[in-house]
Length: 145
Image 1 (cartoon, rainbow, N blue to C red):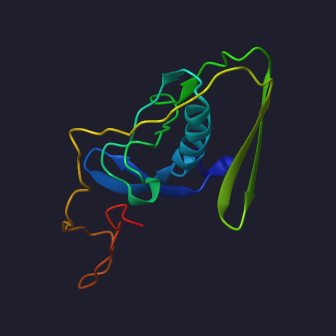
Image 2: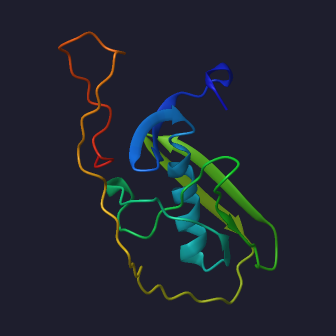
């Protein structure tokens, strides 16, 4: 995944830094998909939240990190039939619509419950020769959108 295939650099958590890189933004897709299948009660086979709190994925504990080749979100369709997921984007919002065979399941959500909360790292200054002397460049905003 790189710029040659149309991807743009967006914010990605790498260790204790939030930096522009290819693949940023995939988490919005993963989180939107995750919330739909979680709320319907499909078994979640693989899912990981972000390394630290990302305010635009509130409430905490309902996000799904995606990083190609390393972290993914997977669920099992244990319904009696096929599942069609229709996606679209409107006014800078992502939507997932799930179509399938209705079964007798009932779902009661409790939580999310969180522990070991990790806040975004504090602002820090790094010195570089990549920008003109005497100038400052803010790389991120601690992911607090």
